[in-house]
View 1: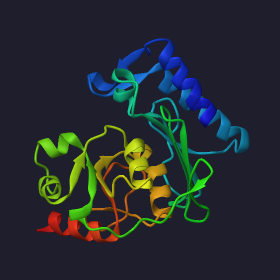
View 2 (view 1 turned 90 degrees about the vertical axis):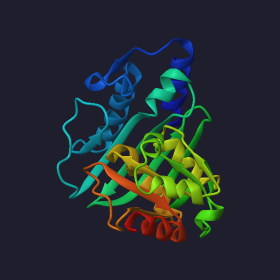
View 3 (view 1 turned 180 degrees about the horizontal axis):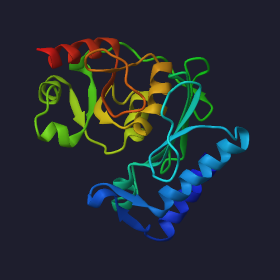
View 4 (view 1 turned 90 degrees about the horizontal axis):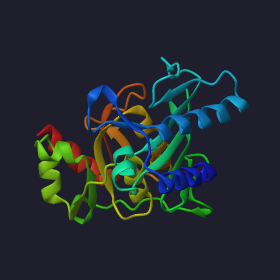
Length: 245
């Protein structure tokens, strides 16, 4: 994956990517490199497992309709708007699930050249460095990462959470947001996430002791979009209570 990340970085620096819009939404971009990266990753998995099933961000692949057995999740460029407009804060993500449970996740912070990988059974690593289990901080001491759009429109519990946290960040990439949790520069992340936004981060976050659940305490449906809170146990308790009150 790091080789693909380096190729993506070099292509972006050579020339502006070819951009189109999904469903006419000027904020929802797709580039030629999104499509090319997805194909590379799918072909790599299929070389090992010709019967592999996928849930991918970009169109053109038959999507898994059940989580039974093995399912691969691919986000070929996460944070495409950042990638196109700023050439920063974007990632490549992939994950393997078995019967609905996360097994392994990979998130490559492309600009920084860092690869986060692992899961509950293997431990979680940044390149070759093992990462420590998260400390159970409370909200008042935490940096929280949020969906900027949901904070602006006042969706519950974003406003109260932002007021009670030590600091709030809006990044625009699920993958990069997850890496902030893994390295300890943030302790909570709340956003509505598509399956490919969530899958790798969930595998890695749970491996580090974070709770990854919907605000009502239920587990995310990995075939649908979910409003998911990734946080320490204490922060999860505090924010879930705000959502109920």
